Length: 205
Image (tube, rainbow, N blue to C red; front, side, top):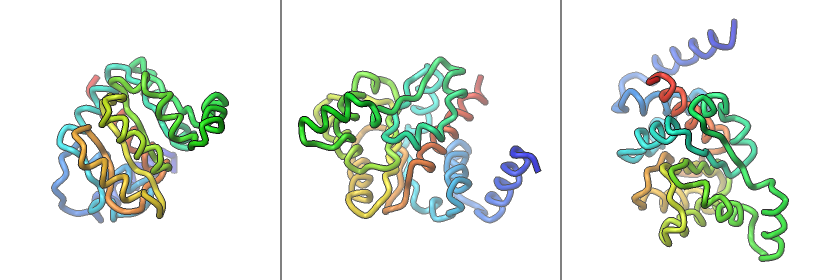
């Protein structure tokens, strides 16, 4: 089978096994792709999408926004060609030597410095956290201080220390978000959310 045939069959299986649900058509395209990436139907119960998040993400992509990721793994999984079709791009500053050097000098994590360095690119952009709760927590601090203004936050850190807690804190903000409750998440899931949004944006051209 060709890749597109495999994907279509996978989606058909997911639709059949998921059964009825209350997601809007666009939200379901996002959740279905998360399930497709993980083979985990629990995302149907765990996902949290703020009221205006899907529209905010689609509009940002269609306006050629910058998508900033906390890991190169998330960046690798994102369809840069779809973003480029609207004049957008994807950036990850975690591996930037200047970020690493500044983090070392200050005695803080690279995730923290990367978030701060990305602040100018965040205006009307999308910030994606698929690994580090530290990045999401510091971004939340910046939001409180009005030091960052993203159009959308995709908050899907994974792990046992502050992953669930940082997502819970994100859900208490006014920023549009796509997240989930609990410890699960990861860079591949976060990338799948961006790809779903970008594909929806392409459908509307």
